[in-house]
Image (cartoon, rainbow, N blue to C red; front, side, top):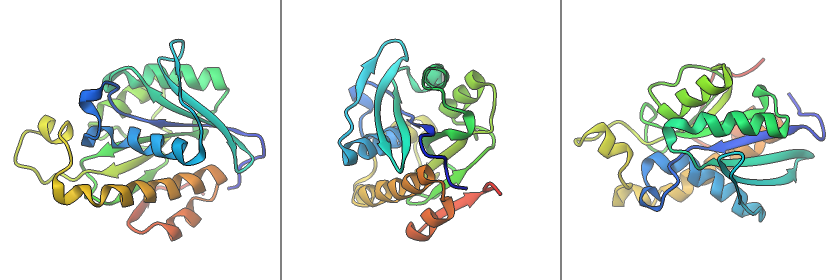
Length: 201
């Protein structure tokens, strides 16, 4: 599928907005979108109306809107629903990037629908937009931990993991690039360790 020139897409990075959560596993989706905007020189601006930080640009002949909700993770869907309406984006042109404990550290999964898998941010998005049929890019943070789930998710990456985080983010950027263009499979060929589940026909 190739997108129509001038189409609108919305790409969301889930995370918690305050500084104490910077660089935690739960904020990896937010980190990916920050990197995507920075790579293209797009400036994020605060939008009280949309409950988020927004950047925009024209890329692959597509109008791209980037969103970092400034609600806490559990209410991310409020910001996403507002942005979809404001920017005139269809649900099938929405991509939500988040962490995922069910995916091995270092791997990413692109899905076009599915349940929240226990992720409160994805659950909130589904509730507010009234559908689970939206694209989501899940960044694996792994489920091998000895602390509580909360401490694992809200904790910083271990020292031996940190060196791989830039590479993981770069893989995600490649997939997002090709998702915008409309050729998901091409993105997979260029990014190792990507698993696509139920891709569109």
